[in-house]
Image (tube, rainbow, N blue to C red; front, side, top):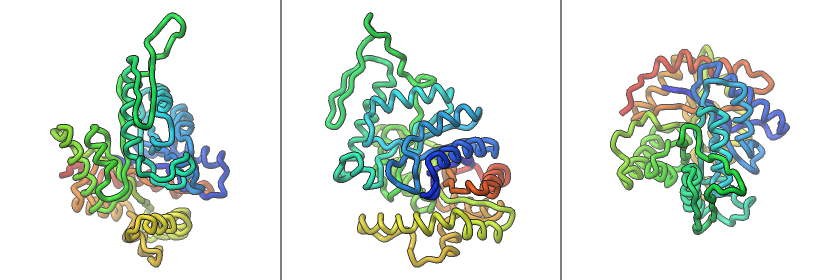
Length: 356
């Protein structure tokens, strides 16, 4: 199994933008030094707890400070930015990273971000995202085009004597793209399958992982892409923390930044999301932190974390890359950086590589 860091970031609202930015870039370096294969930076426009509106700034800075780790926005919210501009910017960044780049995209789940961009609801977000991807692929082809769609209009002219136009093709000629989904029966994950994109699932329950892979296969069958698919492409973002002993790991999570983020942001946010959707919440607001740690996270010594991940793999059918949610250990990074080192050097070798 490969490990990556998903720097959402869950930084405290009182942190300044500079503190959040600096921490994110420093964490890309720490993740590479620990042996992680990927570093992802989230995009949210309005949330105080997840305050990176332009992850490309973090990734560009990280590209200067790293040499091996793959960098990725997680994810650019397609309905909220013009696809031609985003295609140009991300292509440029793929060259800055010299190919160490995956473009993460998503339809956007936060209703406030939608309102912020003038959308009264998110009913058209998936259709807007699909049209956005269509335009972006035309931009990356490097060929002249004109596109008039339901949501977007874009064009790129042929070269002429008046203006010298730059090559808009990504590094290596093609763009690796991952599409994120969080809900069961995710239409975004199905769309990823139909377009041959990397599936990125938020939440590590075996039921969700298995469901999303079936959604992915269903989408792949729609366009005849199902042959030769390997679960190793599946990325799962989840809560994982390791320390030298089970007791120490649970104490650090309960008393430190991870427990604080769950109490103050994640659990209340989940209650609101479920209430708006008219469904049962994933996390019960009456659950104790001990219950959440033991049943909704993967926490413990390297042996315990490996056992828990192996059990999830066996129940779900497996996946290839675990993206660990990053947290605000700005005041004392040592427990967090040690956790990444344990995951890369002690947990990963213990986990079977075969997935069903």
